[in-house]
Amino acid sequence: MVKQKKISIFNLKNSNIFILTFFLIILYFYFSYNFKIDHTSKAYITNQGDNTVSIVDLETLKKLKTLEVGVAPLGITILQKKKLVFVGNVGTDDISVIDAVNDRLITTIKLGTAPLSLTSNFEETEVYVTDWFKNNVLTVSVDEMRVTSSQNVGITPSGIAYNEKYQYQVITNRDANTLEIYDKDHNLVKKIETGNHPFGVYSEGNFAYVANVYDDSVSIINLVDWSKHEFLVGAHPYNVRVNNKVAYVTNTIDDTITIYDLDSKKTIKTLDTGETPENLDLSIKLNLLVVTNWGSDSISIFDTQNFKHIKEIKTGAQSRSFGDFILQ
Amino acid sequence: MKKIIFTLLAIIFSTSALSHGPTPQKVQESVTIAASPEKTWDALKNYSEFNKIMKVRSFKDKTMKIKYELIKTDVPFSDYNAQIRVKKGANDNESIVQWTARFYRTYKLNPPIPEGQDDATAVAAVNKIVGPGLAGFKKSVESK
Image (tube, rainbow over all chains, first blue to last red; front, side, top):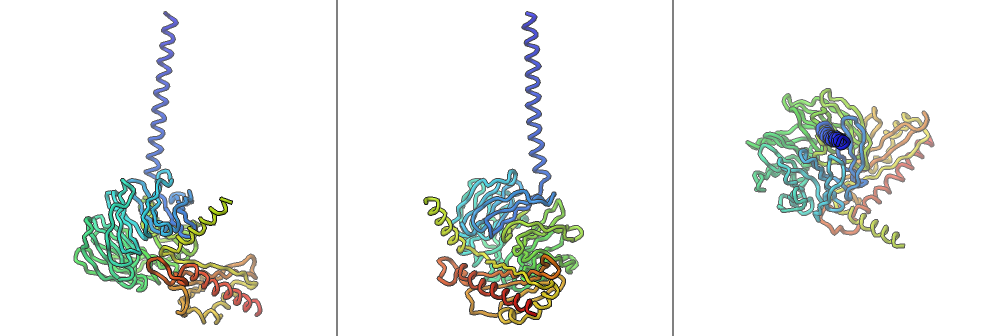
């Protein structure tokens, strides 16, 4: 009897240790998972010349990984809440989907047409893709990971942005010199003239901002009263981003970015980048601006508090990342 | 043998797929010149041969870069922009001249792409300008 009691006490202790260990393991995974989600801001760079995506940690400013995707990756968008990266491959006419937690390719979505640029709705249930050759915007269901509908738009749909406030899709038509605005049911709200050769677009609040490549300018379009005005930048601007009433514009031929104050309507600074800077995105949390350099196969990183260059990092051949490419 | 056939098929497939999208083409070549970067940069600014094919858009002494656009129109490529820059070589009396060109094929619409208007034709034509152009410039600087 005495012996039996001892054994049962021993067993009880043993099971306690098991339970404790089990909880420690759960806690470890819980915190490491949350740590990753809360603290890592990463840039995903599409390298059209070597069919890869470079992933750069924006805290350490070091390259983490290079992933093989489809042929000639160009456009990109990131679902911030779902931690998914959508990369458009114009050579294989498909989309590579990357899980941004583990940085692994999880699926490929066949389109059958060349995806130029991508964006998503606020709920992250749909990704919209401009189809350059057939003048369509495709809707991809994120749950189903397939194209669910296609809508005809104006010619050469190039940049696409999503306006959260009005739930608009905002699209530049490069060869028509227009901007088209569609509502969430894909009805055309407005077609408005831009400058010559509109390409990159950004939209936030009541405005859309369009880079006019051949006019060396950016158009600011009011989405309520449809008034518009322009400001001049460097040679052949490609894309634009806005944060805290400051606009950042890439000047592809000057190898510079223009930093423009939207309140005072003045250029704050013009800074050197790598060669042929094409696209740009901001890490809001880290106060960083990242620019992709097609010519020098790299990215240039700037501090958005003092507008100074921090570092140039080598990525892959012909870095482009047309779209939102930073996981916040 | 199977592997070879597979590789060949893969190459054929990938190049035909590549010519399908709105993709700017890139030609980048460098040449080493036996002259200091300063001397080479001065020579580059005054070199008239390049100006026969391209128009200077801008130049920057600080970074030793010249930006060009194209004058000629009877070429099998379009939207050509280029830069030529001078960099330091292995020693003080050596410099590297790098020419980077960005351009598109002439056919911009839906495939099928007509012969002679594809990416490969455009790249070959630009290669014919860049390679001999740099060689000629090297000769001109080093003979002075």
